[in-house]
Length: 359
Image 1 (cartoon, one colour):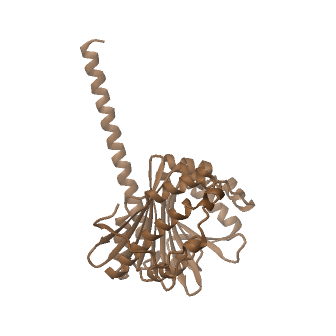
Image 2: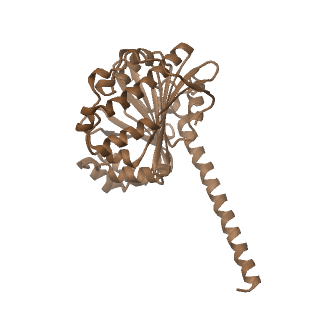
Image 3: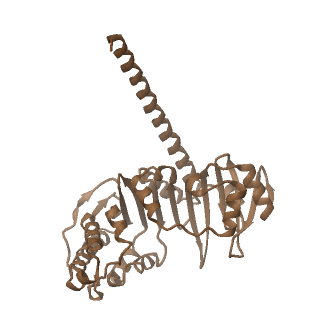
């Protein structure tokens, strides 16, 4: 190839590369803006906010394996009719979803903002057919019955690619409510801290929330002491970030007392040690599939418990890495942790040196 031809090829490659980089940066900026705008609409009085960027997650190898492995739920008749009428398939067309959970005594409701590829005309026509529509100022609010429940889902289009929906009686309240609540900056701080994660949950602690979370642990790992410490946390965050073929999960609990953070870090380190001991128990070795046992041990070995000091708040962070090996292991038996290994009073462990910032 002549020198002039080589120069042309190199120049063309450089131009294409530059265009690709600029396109990617523009996509990231637009994606980040859409994410921030959706989270800004979350009501500050929420008990929890969950967010997932499905457009980002669908590109991750780990989630491709997860979606392929997970059993496909049987679509009910109502959803099948919705799919036929609107052409909207959440597995393909839902890009982002932010959900706020609100508790009022024993009752709860949700408010959500969804971004995706919506056919507004078809969805509106379907909603009018199975439910009702009413004008509220400049917006048309639709209400459709919720299958198997006396409650209804109300929704409205905020733009061509965004809708807001709730199972609360009044959607308009969420659309007109001011965002100057004193708690709004607290939520925004945590949303910004989790900006690098395509999926996360932020929980604002209420009475007994820690006890409820601790109750979800396997029977052999439940601990009254753990429940008590979790109840002293003001915020809990859980974030997942795919890294090639694995998922990095970061859980963090915030409190105001150094002693609480130290005790919780020591307790969680004790839990990890006891879980490893349980998996190495002779009886467990006989009962558990060797591949599954290896996967669970691999997960526990990836565990990193550390303390963070952000000035006004003290935090305990737990990092775990889930691999395809773990997904395969969940198809077999669950680990049998001996019931007498409940970590009520683990020996204090040397805490990881304090770190600052958030991953």
